[in-house]
Amino acid sequence: MLSVATWNINSARLRVGLIEKLLTEAAPDILCLQEIKCESHLFPAEALASLGYTHQAVSGQKGYHGVATISRVPIREVTRHDWQDNGEARHIGVEVLGRDLLIENVYVPAGGDVPDRAVNPKFGQKLDFLGRMTAWADTLDRPSLIVGDFNIAPLESDVWSHKQLLKVVSHTPVEVETLKRFQDAHGWVDLGRQHVPAPQRYYSWWSYRNPGWQENDKGRRLDHMWASPEVARQATAHRVIEEARSWTQPSDHVPLVTEFDL
Image (tube, rainbow, N blue to C red):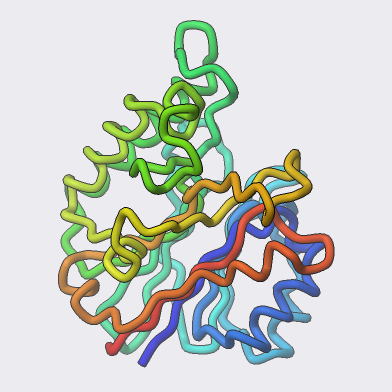
């Protein structure tokens, strides 16, 4: 068995205690973090290694972005793609040693507030990032798992109100269509919806701007775990650790965990 978790932590240094809580309570074999918001040498490597996660691949950046994959089983870093073509630390790929599996950890750009590349360059950068990611996926020929904050909620049941969010960045038709092209490029299987079929409620993010997140439940499914078909067939369980949104000084995202019989 192998369990893999993904979590946009929104600062690894500020929330190292929450990472430790997750590792102690959920105990995934591998944890992929996004938005670590620190340079690689400032990542809390020793604290996490002391819990048994001695295998680490970190791509950091001062104050923004950054991804890290930590593991208690041997892994080896194999790739760092710059799909935004601007030097931002948004991807790291590792190989799980002794198993035929790549794990791609990605943080897709949020895309700003206006869903129009003519007036909002960040939105165009997001679409272009996904386009480059799609070209990469089209050449991928190994069993793979891609996880992270995709910053897109593709299905109507992935948001609290499809009608009200149709023109809001993360749920616009052009983003959904662009993400679907990426999915089709490698035949990725959406593990979340494999185990929690639509239209069941499934969210992974609630805005800090909404203090009553549980009462109002205005969530979106921005975080994803997708697998090659052969890997997806070996997924035995999937869960959303929604209670993490109520932990002290929480991230606005919650962890996802998938278990595999590999």
